[in-house]
Image 1 (cartoon, rainbow, N blue to C red):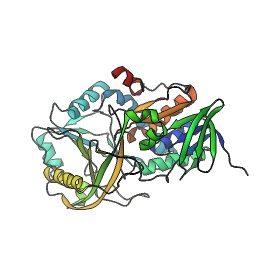
Image 2 (spheres, rainbow, N blue to C red; image 1 turned 30 degrees about the vertical axis):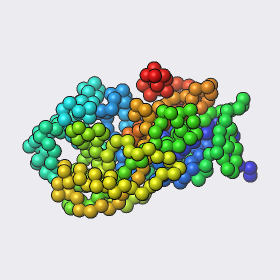
Image 3 (cartoon, rainbow, N blue to C red; image 1 turned 90 degrees about the vertical axis):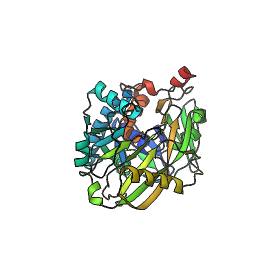
Image 4 (cartoon, rainbow, N blue to C red; image 1 turned 120 degrees about the vertical axis):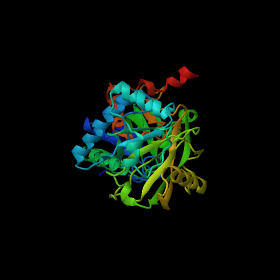
Length: 389
């Protein structure tokens, strides 16, 4: 039997955003092809690593909150249809000076959208989290409904559900080129040429290679993730310890981390995970040196010894991932200009995108099938860069 080569929609990149997009399209009965250059899931891109924070009191911009509210509902829906847990409610601690963007932004979003946030007293901190040593000048906020997602499981489940709905998903397929013709879009790979009415590009760090016109708006950076062995692991299990975000005085970015996540079908239990949320060194996704920097490891250990004194025992593992940074660190979701709304893309997630995957998939499906979405994404459109130029 001759393999199918003609589809309604082709999705390039079946990671976090692409897998959710494939599911939402097939949910509407759309005949789709998903092409992924690696396995599903994989560790070559951005959205892997055992755990990803999800939170509603968004300090980056309160305009994200309605999307997060929808994302929470969509993650719950994925759990319902798959029978698997993806979201783990652990709570999330925020630490920083009262005037810092992290604290100001969290409080603004919480006020605007009535998100439950609790300010912890010094007495509560010492009794509940005795291993932490946070400066008295820092605010200590707790978002009880925050927690973490398991990215590999989520991606796998979305692909599994998409396949049940009839999706064709191909892995280890490198896209060589694509072009628009009068009768649709052609996508060329080493083995075949595929055609579709619409093309959706959700290729993460490779988006700028598939859409050269966007290269000036995107910067790929190398990031370090660390898993450490704590002296008393039981203190850091989910239920005993939350996720956390800490912004140091006079330092850009923020440190973040997780409780010790139990082993699952994709990862062994790897200890206490932490990282520094700030764009690292620029890299090429096809030629990145994946060996983590010892300097970055030392910085993370120093941080841990400062704020989690007595916790560090040894480093279990260091890994490298990538951020696809937009110039303003906000996502870019839109139609590609000049293609009559037949080519769509979602990129520039800048290290804070995974929690939105469940709603981005819905948005991309809306745009591909209806040409519009009811979800509020105007602040993420491409034309904002022209306005700022």
